[in-house]
Length: 217
Image (cartoon, rainbow, N blue to C red):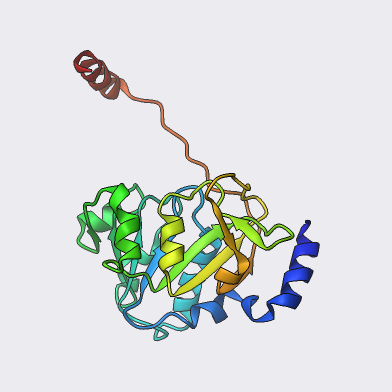
């Protein structure tokens, strides 16, 4: 199905799901825990719009906790000027959040990745709002998590509110990687290139460390 076909079809079936991002964010409340999708599957448009929403309505909510593992986009919710609205809790410290953690503007919770889905499902770490990115639906309404299933699937299944950026550049991947549009509360169509991870060329010191480690393996 092309963009126009699926939009027209599912807007008629689920008109209340198709709202603007800011209307969807009005369902975020004080103290909510917000999950953001992982890595190259991060819904960067939703992150940008969330920050724009708070800049326009700084009293919309306060004390929200933002959690994720590894993300590649910018992390403006860690900036000091938003500390009244957001507090980031990192399950993995990436380049975009390390400075905030080191400066005490964000937290770090050491955790085994394999344990996270169970913590979500048992509501030990309850998720109030999940911001995710999905592929467009097939004719039956099933959308794919694409390149980032990891803990995103369990976070989505456990969340009270699911807000999805539907991006035609997100591939449909096989396996246990699908969610039906009925299980998504708000659908935000927005196409943009996916984030990409690029590795830097190791410097001389890194190469020496690698050689030493290789001898021990």
